[in-house]
Length: 354
Image (cartoon, rainbow, N blue to C red; front, side, top):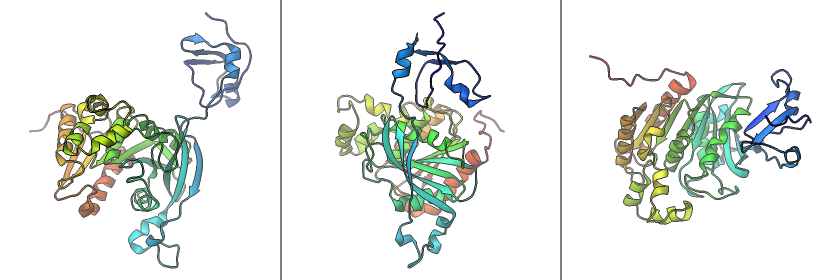
């Protein structure tokens, strides 16, 4: 056995080690976290001087800034702060423009909380588009995230690194997936948040981000995909103009190397998705941005992998399901309420019945 450190040092959030041995139980007194007996890093005991000199980064998910977001004037009664009747849900929630840490980068996003004490179930919203195209704006926050928050959910969404003034570089489903997952510790620090009840919603490119996040975490009680991207090889074939975007944003990609596209295509690895996260796929049959057949193939992959899912094809629906908004919101809310808010049991996927 290596020698035990006898000195006392400070443990700060964000420090990474293989093993930390404490001299007392921090559950009894949090001050005991300061009493380090031993630290292992890379399988080796860390030298005491190196430990004390080591730079300790701030933790991922740390909320750096949170500024109240006013509602867009066009949604309010003229000369008033009250929303127009058709946007009445805005009265029940509060929105914030936020900056948080992800992989040491300052990343921009939005958060919407229901008024009241909570705790509330939580929902991570993954935006579509890339860079500034289809970025979250106060209007989309009000019309989408705030509506969902009015259902009784604490809702948060990222712009992804490198966008909206954030640091770093977007990777279209690469390291920027960490920006999605690092919203979980951000939520865990919110007094109103019940992160044992956690769901995810992704639209278009945000669907790809949702699948990638689900492949790395089984914490999510349910997920909703609206016109979600699940096969970038199919996207490249159907929309050749997207190839130049892939070259710009995806590290290591060129036309001869398809692996980065496969890595981002859930239809190729549906068996990596958790068995405990029911997935709702909403897809319009008149969507030209994401071919409806892509959602059909993803459904087939989920069926083959024996994963719980529901596919809803909306006749004549476009990419944003604009002609089917009431039904879309009904489907989304019902799915989230069943599995996230109420913790309904998973469906029986074993063949049964008469």
